Image 1 (cartoon, rainbow, N blue to C red):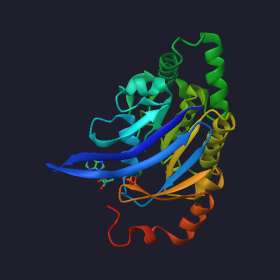
Image 2: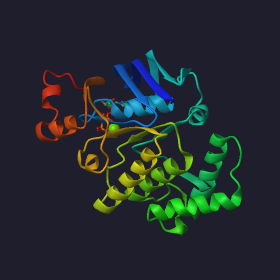
Image 3: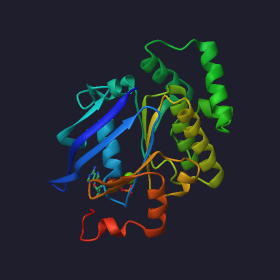
Image 4: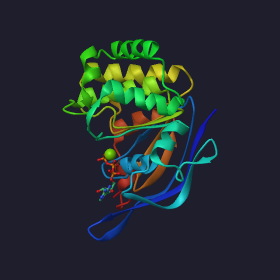
Length: 254
Ligand SMILES: Nc1ncnc2c1ncn2[C@@H]1O[C@H](COP(=O)(O)OP(=O)(O)OP(=O)(O)O)[C@@H](O)[C@H]1O
Ligand SMILES: [Mg+2]
């Protein structure tokens, strides 16, 4: 079983000619087959963690390690991370003008599987996955993220997740901007890949409402650039009732 191990991760970002430390020692282990939720107040560094794992150039790793199956992730180029089995869905995904969803998915699958999927089975695979997500087939011909509504972006993310079958998936704010039906469809998608037992999921979210559909094995509270408490699914209920105040008092959070 593959394991993503984050140890004492420190990350800075350049802003207004100053260097600001955002991540202050993140420790987290996600194993294939496990579902983790990270919850925490605005600005606590959750997306920074996702971007840092994705290898975004704005974020400088100043300390700590990240390994997948013992391999140094931080040493890998962005596409190598995907090939190694890491999937990252961003809070604000980029547009890819001139590249259709269908081509994008096939190129990604080719890179990850090491060979181009056979066209006939691939078309069928994509069609079935899109039907499961209630996506219209015309969607496959649209340019990636161009003019996508919030819900469409999220469905596209889950479509990638189901087709690319990563070892570990990091989903940032998959529930933001989703109406109730879309939330259910996305949650079911996450649950389907979960049931394979082959995907470890790290779900970054503010809302416990998505956790009504996806029952995490572990919940982590993120505050002030690190994980300050970890527990089971019951911790999410406690956060829903009590908020983050207990963790942010005294200016711990950013
Ligand atoms: N590229 C950047 N340039 C400048 N500041 C940044 C950058 N990225 C993150 N920060 C700062 O780092 C802090 C953490 O931001 P981050 O987006 O990681 O928080 P978050 O926990 O994801 O918040 P939210 O819940 O609102 O999504 C914020 O103060 C933010 O302004
Ligand atoms: Mg964020």
